[in-house]
Length: 484
Ligand code: GLU
Image (tube, rainbow, N blue to C red):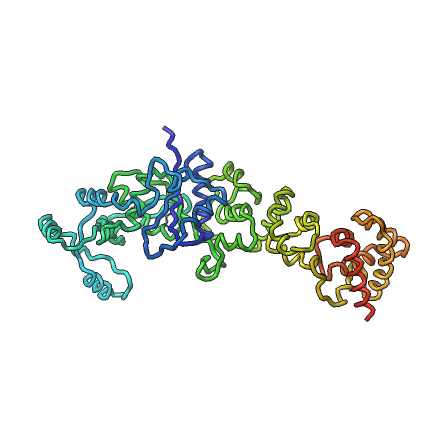
């Protein structure tokens, strides 16, 4: 029988979407969708100390914006709920007790003080000490007496005394650990809530998860998880551990150290589709040199064998390049819808034709946030120095610029029809008349119109957008500057 692929994204609501978490979600989604499977959202909110107001909305919003639509989850239900871990709290004790009965777990009544003293007596003085199994050998009667007396307890997993545990990870290959190294980890805490290490195994099993994708920081816990599956007689999932996303060769990407989250990138004017595309390639390769993928295309070609175990560096320059590619290749109306709010804000009250400006911008932008800086000169001619009129390739200097602007002024003043074509024809006729190079006229005019060393659009486009009156005014300002 063909088993249905079921993956899950199990974020803790921290209040932002870390790039690494989004990549995990994306790969989980793609593993499921590339094989006609289901993608499940489970919110792991049991760490009450880390809870942040509105944090689950960040998760929903991110999945919605990126198009990683889940098939089951807290907001849409499904056959395997509840999908919020805190609502599942009643489910774990029976499973823990089942393990106690099977001899795979045991009650531990050790006090905090006793456990603390284990740390102190630990030769390395480490913050962590393996539990010394003090309570493992309590007789059933002793255990019952303590339970009856209401002594607080935890339930611990009993690790095998000898031998090794081996599992195969899709990315890291076969991993073997000595069982002697494994701590008898706590499954149920004194407050009778499960630990994350126990809950995730029970949840993944009950939700019939076939593939678990998570960060490589969980690799060392996986043997313990596998021993739990084994103890219950359950089928373990396929494990896909992902290497960390790095800031540079030595540091992991970290929000605390100022690295950007998904929301930060959106606020900085990056497009969702470009971010998703870029993140897909942070640890996965299609096996050829293609780089631009829509989510749909990724769904079709994603294959687990393309995952890599070498850590990937988050390269904002590459993302920025990719973002520019997305903007260039976007349908103009779609681009305009994205650009319009920023244009309106930057050029409020100017009455300029924003669509024409957007057309000039589309091929030149790297991110939407570049818009205000690139279009500000349309609203107000900036202060600029005459050195802008000197351009080696255009073969211009102050002198040439002055004579060109002086020649252009009456020609443009006399122009009846004011549009890109008529301005073009008039200026090109003047170039011919003066016997100079195109750039020797067009560069000075462009400079006078923008007051910027570079601008979206050349002389004719800028003149057309600014209108006759304002263009002439700016050319006069240029002449004045150059005459000084
Ligand atoms: N809630 C865990 C986290 O956000 C999930 C880890 C896992 O995928 O099992 O790190």
